[in-house]
Image 1 (cartoon, rainbow, N blue to C red):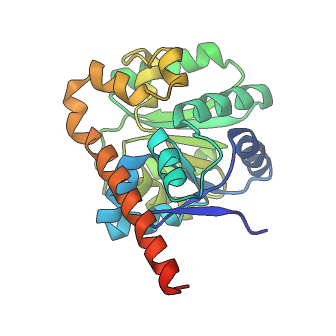
Image 2 (cartoon, rainbow, N blue to C red):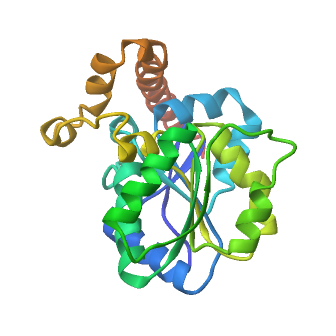
Length: 252
């Protein structure tokens, strides 16, 4: 079955709502289908534009969803609007809730040792029926570690990787061939929020799609990373006008 995709600076985003995506992922997990999902924001798009290897990894995922209001704005600029933003943190919370209801198993990788340990305690408290089959902090030797073997032996239904981009996607892409099943998803700084180490933006900021501004106010050191957003929007306008020019010339 062909799925509708929207091309955003050469990254192919899935045209999907969160509700539909959760139904799809639930079915795939229950059928033991291996799945790699990328939650991409403008920072990831711009990084992929400069890194062909990373672009290949992202487009090689089973699903790429729009995590970032900038991606939604960009899709509107080029006249191919995506239906909605799907925040990675919210998607993770929904998956944990479904996993709790269905008795799924999960593995968690990333963050500092004290952060992931606190996050695991909070997850166990909130989702008591979820089977936590393992976890590891994000500080390990990339070339010499037993994490993939642990995951392989545990056979979790879901694997949440919080190493930050591009490391989390590279880790998944490098190791997923050896696993039999499971949903693999990069979740950035989600463990810090679950652990209470970082406070998420208030709901009103979320509804106004201003989480990025809230994070910038709370963490001014992020300003360099935030430069990716205006650069991304400029690129989207360039893409829009380039497409118009090609259309007028009759370029397919």
